[in-house]
Length: 282
Image (cartoon, rainbow, N blue to C red; front, side, top):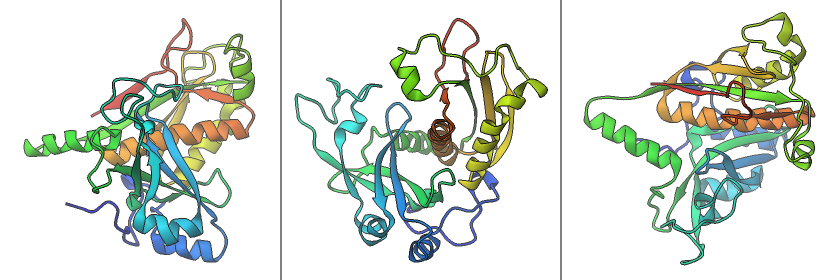
């Protein structure tokens, strides 16, 4: 079995055939020495598909985290959407306490974060104290399903289409309003419209270019039916890497929107109009 925590080989192409290759450990070491990268985001995909974890100094990541991992609380895989610990989980809970697990960097996912200065990112797997994977972590659940497929002589290629809505408010303003009376980025449906999406193209273009720089294979973007609604499409690819990109894209789109003073949501059904789909193609 391939050790996903080993150093990726130089010359590899990016996810799903993207032009930008993954960031090798050697390239990261050179960038740290040149002081062009100073921060590494170590990210775990949680039960809601969000990225949680730590921002590490790049020096500490190279000196310690690559070899030994980083500790993190088990509660990250036992919370609700508001990050409140819940009862009933076998991994952790108020009834049995909250221990730690290890976040071990999957170096095949190491990449630049173009929308943050001097920053790289790597996804992590949650490991128990004995080094065994935490079976309920989303990436491990997906790997288990793929193993079942391969026993039947099958494999899975995945493509996702993620629609989102853009609001002319910051995230803080939206929260303080109770998420009421938010102004959408367009006043009418812009499904497939070109001229009418011009006003939000600077934001969407920045997201497209940033995701390419992060090693993803971006194909296109288009307006959608609901007000302020848009979607960005990516090339299909192996299930784990496609789903990794899916989570990083959502995270990155929200960070970029915040930098631009607006907010985006991938919420499935924001209002009575058309919802934002997550189309999954297998």
